[in-house]
Amino acid sequence: MTEAQKDRVFNRFYRVGGDQHPSGEQGAGLGMAIVQHIIAIYNAKIKLADSPLGGLRVNVTFAGVKCD
Image 1 (tube, rainbow, N blue to C red):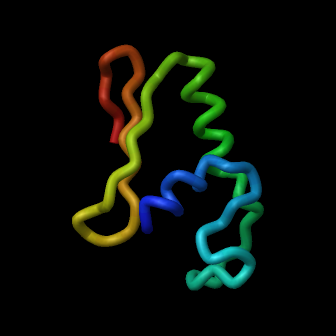
Image 2 (cartoon, one colour):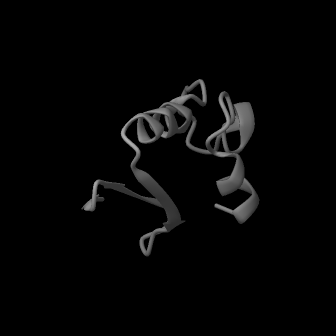
């Protein structure tokens, strides 16, 4: 995932690859927007990084407790 895609991934209805997503999976592009909303409610932090296995790694920290 490029840095530009990481910047946009929290936008509602945004899907990396658009409607022609390489995975072939159906989706609305709302997942990360919902996660961001929950993060804001609980005053948590979120960090996006490249996964060593490929793809995206998402780190979420709630009140000092890190959840991977």
